Image (cartoon, rainbow, N blue to C red; front, side):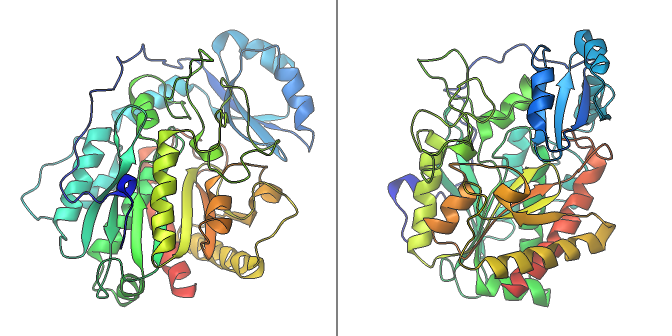
Amino acid sequence: MKFTAAAALLVAPLAVLASAVPKVERKITYDGYKAYRIATHNNAKSVTDKLAPLAVVPFNQNTRDHVDVVIPPSEIAAFEALGFEAEVLHEDLGADIREEANSFAPYQEISAQAIPSDTWFDAYHAYADHITFFNDLQAAFPTYSEILNIGASVQGRQLFGIHIWGSGGKGSKPAIYFHGTVHAREWISSKVVEYLAYNFLTQYNDTAVKAIRDNYDIYILPFVNPDGFVYTQTSNRLWRKNRQTRSSSSCVGTDINRNWPYKWELSGGASTDPCDETYKGLAAGDTPENRALVSFTQSLSASKGIKLYIDWHSYGQYILIPYGYDCSKRATNHAKQLSLAQSTASKIAQSYGTKFTYGPSCSTLYATTGDSVDYMQDVAKAEYSWTIELRPTGSGGGGFVLPASQIRPSGVEQWEGIKYLLASV
């Protein structure tokens, strides 16, 4: 397979690049903050207008059904006086974040070419440990995998990944292509794509897995936004964007998933405000992360093509197919994509009963412009292009701050869904 210079293959172990990393800021604790889900009854503007006078922290939103917000202690009485129909997602967000942090486990050193223990999926880990985990996982299967480095983040961290193949040989088959941790606070996404990588490598003796690997080359990038992820571990657990600064604003960060150079110029699916969570940047593809991703994506597209792309996110339990930029537009193979999404959701539910809503991104959730799924479908010509929003859906799980006890079940149910999906495309 041919790669451009920006998508060069790195076969040496990964390293943490720290030269451009700024000093750690004071950590935000969120002690006493409460997270709520507010029913909108299809009138989100009425809800957001009433919230405007309050110091509200955006949490997540589905503007057709609900808005999720975090309220500081000083504003809780004023919020409750508004009389919203609301449920509590976190009684004390700071306490739940500390509980999550207490679940961290140090990575256990292993001998050369040994397979990492699957206890990795029972806890959260520091970013440096994720790098070690991938190095060790690849080293255990050197004949059928390699470490990728497709470029660097704003602060110089490698955008790394793993490439896995089967009996056909490296780069000989259409691509299965997964992104994780596009939004920094969505920790469960990196864990789930790691679970998938782990099983693709360790279960090659399974007939179904062997068929997948022999028919496809698998490319998994666990941290599309490494700077943001590190920032969530050191300073602000709820940070979403990358850590790019701009001379025109004191606000930091661009939403990498509103920065793809396709339908970026349209309004209504991203923000032009640098302080906003969905800030799309000054120009299409003007984040270093996106430039690297576009270059690598085009190399896959130009080689054997992309069979399936999935952008893994949290939360809400959705399988979303194209398009985000237009609620009435449908992909040419829409019926097939919708049928597969429905069947995959059914397969996911067989493990623990977890229900996933499925449908076109814009009409099912909300409008997005400059997003990866639309780019993959129309520009990179992926046959199937999806977003999967992982657990939870409401108060039963914890939003972005998902208990460590849900890491393994999240991986298990997605693994069953992916095995079905890749046997069906």
